[in-house]
Amino acid sequence: MTAPASPAPPPPAPAPYRGAVERHPRRPLLPFDTGTDPDAVELTGPVFGPADVGEWDADLTRQHPGEPLGERITVTGRILDRAGRPVRGQLVEIWQANAAGRYTHRQDRHPAPLDPNFTGVGRCRTDDRGRYAFTTVRPGAYPLPDESSWRPAHIHFSFFGTAFTQRLVTQMYFPGDPLLPYDQILAAVRDPADRHRLVAAFDHALSLPAGPLAYRWDVVLDGPSATWTEEGR
Image (cartoon, rainbow, N blue to C red; front, side):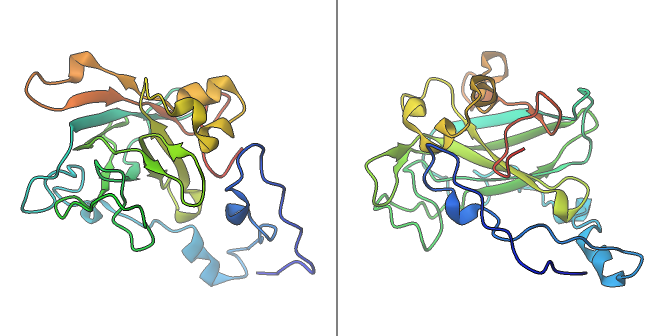
């Protein structure tokens, strides 16, 4: 592995989002050759197997002895490639705030209460049709620190691809949320079609009369109809 002589300056933050500068790469990508550097294979080798997904990992309401607070929801959809083909066996991970709008994280200083029965993280693998499904609670909105704006309800998604270096991260929003027009992260996605693809659809047919309401969100990993990801394209 050979490092470049001088790192390139970081790209400017995409207007109008002001919080992305810290996440921008500050150095150019490093090339590696598995033929001359045997250790480089670790960067592309499989990371997770079926045994790494536990029985209750996809049901965030059953990961603790007690019942979490909040509205029960199901979030389901398909993971597709650019040709519309299902991506099978894909590891899908989510993380989110609790119903009060607070993450189980030491750096979250939002004064909303923590829920001892809700951690807010889950994972599953897609089936042969590329389908995934999570049972969780609808996350609450929360204010951004040191700013006068709020983030709408959203769930973070991660797709690991077939290797650790292929990971894509994005966010799913809820339809009809009045905070959507004011979210700086969503506003940073300039193409209206890309913004639309980040909003899930309420699916009455999948909702249960006495159970969770269902939201459907399909994700396209690449191609002209790809779902927008935080790494940019």
